Structures are given as structure tokens and as C-alpha cells.
Image 1 (cartoon, rainbow over the protein chains, first blue to last red):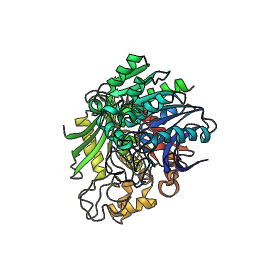
Image 2 (image 1 turned 120 degrees about the vertical axis):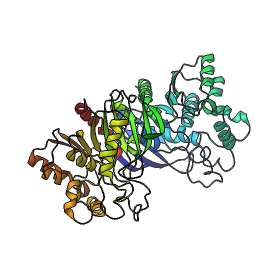
Image 3 (image 1 turned 180 degrees about the vertical axis):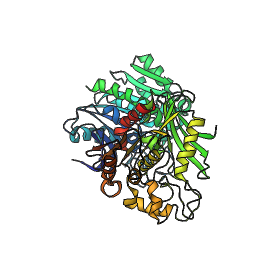
Image 4 (image 1 turned 90 degrees about the vertical axis):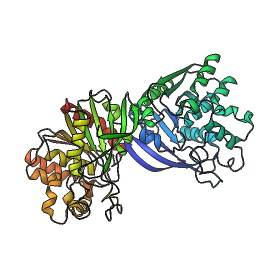
Length: 277
Length: 277
């Protein structure tokens, strides 16, 4: 076992666990939470949940109510932390939208950040290996919220052979063209925008990336970040142009919070279970 | 409207709200959260959730997943804070199990606390009035966790004409005989144990208090406070002696956390809905 269980709580006849392991990608200890509806050995698949800005491994697993919808399945859900923590790089803790709690699921190349902020590889290598080797699952899908929805789209579109299906809540679909994305991509990758393309879901589709299965997105229409940061229509338009199958549900009155996520997580879980079977 | 909505989040086609109002009992502003599956005017009943030590109005409504199980009903759930806050009495913030976050649902009579720590009256008068007058509900049931389970049992047994049904998760059933209870009751009421009896569920049953409907309790067997603080068997024994109808589910492997509550909240909601109809 290459991870340590820090806390374990029986939940819906399965277990919610809070864990720590060593990451080769970030060269740090990293924390994650998970819900296992069955024991290891009886699980057959996993959903990776990528959280948004300011979150850590605790938010989703305590707030979304996902356990209730996975309790009858053989599918676990795993929720990694959103960045390395406490690596001592200058500026790391200065803002909510860059540095700790804001890894943006990229492999940083800028001085100071390139040593540890390798969150794309952390998910694709460390977490996927952990799921296959330690949790013994065969198939994996990916989803997330906001910055984590961006991560799910980018990781899923670049690695369709690894991820059976992709969904997202309120994703940042076009970070090259929004303030959050500009700050993060310039800070982690530098000013050469050619290097940003592989971390921008719209640009990836434009460059030919595809997933064979329909992508599912839920977006609240009362989301305070909808127009300035999320730019959902840009992804809809490019997917439509190139016939990438996509379903976007716009939800009247819903905001950017976990109350929105909890209202539709069952539909996203059912969507992934249909591909993971 | 005698309350102010501070935050409002659409949830399962209803609304989760965070509010503030002025309490006549505590002579302070008090906060509460609630989930309204329907608009005011379309609601017919309410469940009061009383939280445990260290909690405020946020814990249950964000962690328990209750909204999902009330979404089809005309029953709201309201979650009051667990004490007045910031009233400036000496010792108020010194420990997790006394003072702020630990009002114990009693009317304090000791110097310093008697002015504001009137949590029994706050629930019975202010919250019940708020529900009937502002939220326009007819019938009310009561439940809670740990210290809040104690509160639900005491308020429900002393006011069976007000509360249609009573349930509790991991309740402190016999505060006169456990460390948490001794500290709180002596601190809020003084050393005369005659004054403690009306805040002790076991003593209330012994003194003749009854509820016409079966009381429901869920208790985890891996709960770290089970043997020293909760004393569930004392309540079972006294109810059995006097034929107060009671159902206790002991749950193998479950602890004192919200992961336990989330696993069985649906059963408690269904229990209350059956009496609120």
C-alpha cells in the first residue's frame, strides 16, 4: 500500500477515507479523500473529482452528497487536493487564485513553480497509478468543478484512452481568454501563449483533440463567474463546429456553489457509471 | 418578515438560505440556515435540526445531504445556531463544550449566562414562532445530533403538543450522568441537581414525560463518545420500564461524524414526514 489512511468513516455501508501519499510528480506529500462503496478488490472503477479554486481534498467529499449515489455501485470516487502545499516558493500563499489551492492542473515551467507544481502529471501519473495499483480499479472517468472542470476537460481530452468519460460543473473552458486563466497560465507557464494551448479545452478541440463519448457539462445561470470566467458558449461553439459530442445543461437560478453541485451530482455519477460498466 | 436572508442558494429546485433574526429569548441576533423545497405559502410543515457541540448553523445544511430527501416534500428543515455569540461573558470562548457553540438547549440561571444563554426558550419560542408566522408552517417535528439530540429529546418530551415527532442521532440522553452534561448543567444552572432534571431526557421520562409517538434514535457503535457521554442504554431502559415507545438502531462501525448522519438522515426524514402529513 503506497498511501496512509489518516481518517476513516463508515458511510452508507462503505467508507469515506482521508489519506496521504508521496507524489513523484510534485515531490511532496499529497492528500486526497475517497469514498469506497466496497472493499478494495471488490471495486471495478473510479471517478476522479477535481476541485476548484481554494478547495482542498475535503470540500467535495463532505458537501456534495456523492456517497449516496455511489453506494450501490462498485465505483469509488477520489478527490485529490488542488495543489502542493507549503513548498516555500515566493508568492505561493498570496492569492486565492494562484499558488496553493490553485494548481490549475498544469505542469508548471516557471522558476519557483516548476519544481513542485506538476499537477497535470500528479493526476495523470500518480493518481491514475494509485487507482490501478492500490485500489485495483480497471476503468476511470474524470469530472470536476470550475478550475477542476477545466482540469477534467483538459486531462480527459488529452488522454481519451485513460478516461472513459468526461463531465464538468461550471468549468473554466477557455482559460486563455479569461482573467483566472491568464493569471494562472502566465504564472505557471510564462508569457508564451503557444505553451498555454495544451491546457485550454477550447484550443485542444480546435487542435484536433477528441473524446469518443459525449461530454457532459452543467452550468448555473445565476453563477457569478459565468460571463467573465467560464465562457461556456466558447466550448459549445467549437465542439459544435467539429462535431465533438457535448451536452450542456444550463440551469436557471443555480450559482457556483456546492448547493448546485449537490443538486446535479447524481446525474453526473449516473452518466459516468453508464460508461464505466 | 422578521428575518433577513444573508445568502440564498438554489438547491434541488428549492432554496438553501442562511439568515439572521433578533431573538427575544437570547436578546441577541441569532443565525439559522434552512432548506425550503417550496416557496413560503406552499410549505406545510418543518423539521427543526439541533446541532451538536462546536457546530453553528452551517454544519448540517452543508454536510448531511438532507435537501435531497426533502426535495419532493412540502416540509422545510431549519438549523439554528447552537448558542448566542459574542455576548462578552467571561469564559464564553474558553472551551469547546461550554459557552459559545455549546448552549445545551437550556435556559441558564447562573450569573453571566442567564442574560443571553436562553437556548431552550430560543428554540421553543423564537424558532417555533418564526416557523409558524414567517414560514407559515402548521406542524413541526424535532431532531438533532449529540448535544442537539439531547435538545430534541428534552424539547420534544416537554412539549409533545408542539412537536409532532422526535428523533435523534447519537444523543446525550442522560446529561446528569456524563462529563459533558455535568459541566454544562452545573455551569448554566448551578450545583442544585433538582434544577437539572427538566433538561435530562432520562429523568423526564422517569418523572412522567411522554410522547404519544415512537421516538427514533440512531447510534453508531464505533462512536468515540458512546460509552462515556451518550449512555444510550439508560434511555432505552427507562423508556422500556414505563412503555414509552422507542426504537434505537445501533449501527455497527459508524462513528460520531456527519458521515454517519448522512447515511441515515433519509430514514429520519421519512420518519418525521410520516407524522407531519
